[in-house]
Image (cartoon, rainbow, N blue to C red):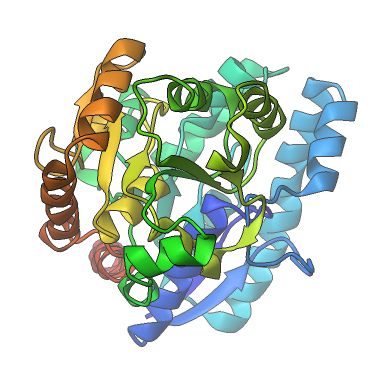
Length: 388
């Protein structure tokens, strides 16, 4: 098939991984993919945890309402580029990654009749209203509902997120839940845990790990305080793979607690280095997560067979089963989280059993980008048959 792939994402974080891996998987399966997206001539391309500075600066300086009007206005710019690509490429399907106030894919579908698949990773009107504030919330909700209802198939990453789509009138028949995936070949090249620890100079250590853009609400301060307590083994180490706004405070806390080299932050790294670093983990951490997300880090932890600790909430339980491939604790229950940490830290056999369950989950649930691409193509063909 000829796939016209459209997105408005310029950051180099988990969003970029999803985009690049889906494009690669589609092409490897023999499909032609034309990408229409913001220019990304960035010397940091491929680095994980990096944000696009000029976007953040613009958002900080402009009144919210004005910034949001500019976002909506960008739809016209994006549509012209998308329409020009469609005239030349003659796509069988438009695949768009949803972003707030972005309606270019919907406009092109309306004008040409080319089927539209819309990948939805978050309810952005709600998310931005809750965390960053919206100047024009009614306009945001209108644009979001229009985009979601206008797709031939909407592809939320969790069933919890699908509830948001159903609530604005997207029919169940046009919703397909497709979680994040993994590039199995990329992670198959990861070293054995002992070699990964040796590369860090942590031979014989019990390594706790977290990957991604670390924020205050992730609760990593709890892990650092536990590391400094008498409940943590003397050989416990913490590795945070990535960066984020919480890093300075966490580093200060680790210094105050005199943890020294027992806590490390890699900072922004190229994503090709992620498997080799995660391979060192004995216990993989997801201390907190929003209630609709499909965390990419969880899929990576599963692929490398790590013993996972995560909150017991519906979106997480779509992938994790307590006692089979993870230990789950009640969200916000600090004591429960610490009990899970202590239990795993003291039980190597349990870590091994959960790790094997984690590895098996990838095959059992088909949590791969290749599998996701096949599902998307099947839906594109079904949508095309309906149009015909």
